[in-house]
Image (cartoon, rainbow, N blue to C red; front, top):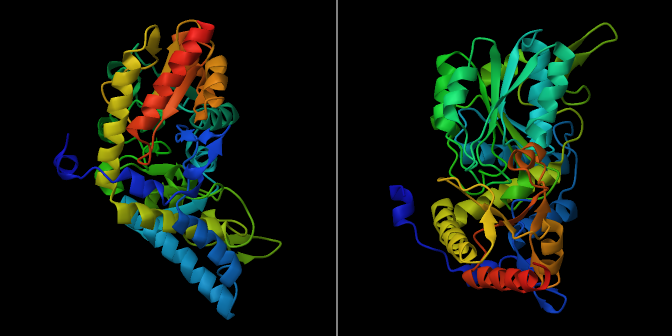
Length: 414
C-alpha cells in the first residue's frame, strides 16, 4: 500500500450514501444492493442538480454566440475542460477532447491515427483482456489499411504475460492499446512498464481508463501515455459524455475524425481548413450539459478525496473477496495479484444468468454475461461470469447480503 493510501481515512459511507438518491430505492420491497458499478455508477445530488441547472438557467449553444446565455454556456463548458485537464494532470487543456464516451474516443484514435500512420504489414498491439471497444475499432482499421492486429496473451490468473509482450513489441508495431483495469476480471495492468518499454522502441500507447479513472489516481504526465480514454458515467457523471486525452504532437498530426461545425476554420467548395485543438476533433454541437456536469462530478470526487475513496473501496473489495472465497463451489474467474473495482465468479454449475436473476429477485443488482470481453470468456472456456463491482458507497452489509443471496440461489439450483 502506498503512503497516500496508508494515511487516507475510510469514509463515513452512510453519510456518503445520502448524497446518492437512487441508493435509497427499494426493489421488490427490499433496499437496493447496487453492485453493478463497472457498468455505470450512480449520481450524487450535486451532479443531478447541475444537469437541471444548465437546462433551466443557461441552456444555449457554445462558441458561436455573442449573446449572454451563449457566453455563459461557453465559459462553463471550457471550465469543465480545465477541470478534466487538472484531474489527470494534462500539460495543456487543449489536449482534452470531449467525446461521447470511451468507445467513441478509441474509435477516434483508431480511425484518425490509423488513416495517418498505418500501412500494409504494420501491426497494432492490444491485450487479450480488452473490452470489445478496444478490439473492434482496431480490427476495422487494420482491415482497411492491411495492418495486422497482435494480442498480448493472459495467464490463468487473468494477468498479462509480459514476457510475450516483450517478444511482440517489434519495430512493426505502430501503436499499443491496452486497458488500465480489466472490466471483466478487475486486473490492474502494469501500464507504466508497458508505456516505458513501448516508448523505448518509439511506439505510442493508448490507455483505456474506463475502469481506472474512478478508482486510481491517474497522472498522465507521470504515466506519459500518448492517449487516454474514459467515460463520464463511470465516474459519477452522466451518460453520453467522455474524454479523449491526446498528446499535442499526435493530435496535431492526426486528421479530423468527423466533419462539421466547430472543427472548421474556413470552408469553401474548393477546400476546408481545420480548426485548432481541441475543436479540430469536436465536430457539431457537443454534449454541452454532459461536459459541464462531468466537471461537477470531478468536483464531487475532489471534495470527497480520491485517496479516501480508494481506501474505502479497497476495504469493501477485500472484505467481499474473503467472504465470497468461503462459499462452497464458488470459483473466481481471474485472480490477479493487483485488482480494482470488480470480482468475477461462478458458483458450481449454475449458469451466470440464473444466478443473476435469483439475486435480482433478492434486490441485488450484479452484471452477468461476457461483459463485452468474449475473448476472455473463450480463454477460460466459460459462457460468462457473475460480476460484482464496487464503488465507495458500497458497504460490508451489502456484501453480506450478496453472500446470503448466493447461498440461497446455490441451495435452489446447484
